Amino acid sequence: MVTLPFPNRNFMQMCWVVPDLRAAIDSWVRAAGVGPFFWFDGVPCTDGRYRGRPAEFPAVTAAIAYAGDLQIELVCQDDDEPSIFSELVPRGRSGLHHAGLVCRDYETERDTYIEAGATLAFEGVIGTSRTCWLDTSPTLGFMIELLEPSATRDAGFAAMRKAADIWDGTDPIVGLS
Image (cartoon, rainbow, N blue to C red; front, side, top):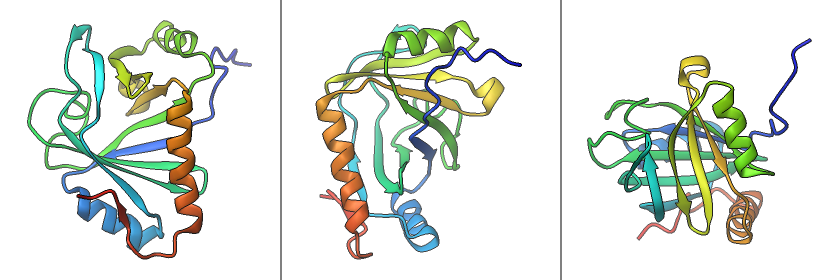
């Protein structure tokens, strides 16, 4: 029997890096009926650290939708700078980047992954709560994102989930300016 040091295995998100966000959204809508996607031009992040050094969050455009209980995130990096996204999926390519967990105890869960051999690839405050990406790619082939819960984050995710539950297939992109 294997002793599991990971008390939280409730993955709630899968994220793909894509070269063309609109095309990826269209594919999810047509092939899987997933939508609507909430479009984000950039991700507001403070106190960022990439591989242990102070850093801005990568320049990205992203979109999030729900497929049942699973959050689907699509990310397109807008430049060629080294980042948590480009180090796993080169520009112009598509690939699974990470699976996400909303933490019960952010520090304990982050430290558990590090003690198990993952490296802290990026950490910062997104919106009002801490978020990190742990590099588990040598063992899993993708990273793990840990999300600290907050009322703001919870309300945003709940609104996206509700929109998916009542979506009629029209207007597949929300928030595109």
